[in-house]
Picture 1 (tube, rainbow, N blue to C red):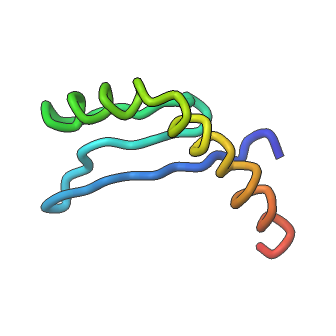
Picture 2: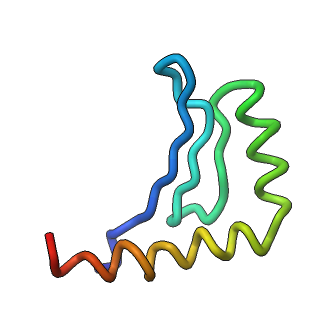
Length: 66
């Protein structure tokens, strides 16, 4: 169960702008605008903590279903 991760990606025009990865614990930007937005989101520690909790709340809860 340690290899399960929660990923949240944002795309525009078929191009990935930024992504949250629960293994990294932060957003990573892939475009200039995505990098700026990732920096803003990463500063909000309560928002990042909520996303990290999604791994336990969503992924690990549903692992028995799949």
